[in-house]
Amino acid sequence: MGAGFKVEISELDGLVRELHRSQEEMRSALNALRDTGPKTTGSKELDNACDEFHDSWDDAITKIAEGTQSIEDGLKKTRDTYRDVETALRDGFAGKGGAQ
Image (cartoon, rainbow, N blue to C red):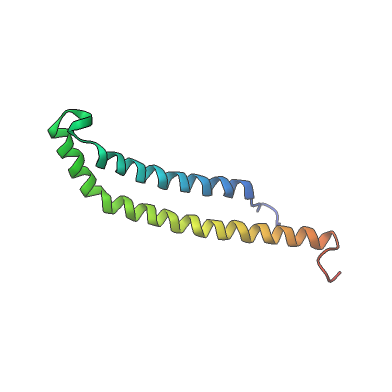
């Protein structure tokens, strides 16, 4: 690659994992609020507050998770393209790429 430009595929892999984990954590937190109630907290007021919070954030967290999924999908494509180019360059310099 050119001077000053380098793509670390392992770093892209790590970012993909982090994005996926963040989606799971957002959904898990929202589900935990839905499942919280007087049986687990002993407080009707807390149950109502959790329900209100869940209702107000359900759509927003779903949209954030969907957006994060779109970013994750694009990042995977980018990573795969860089990996393919890197492999093609390596194979080309090793004489495996056809034309010499």
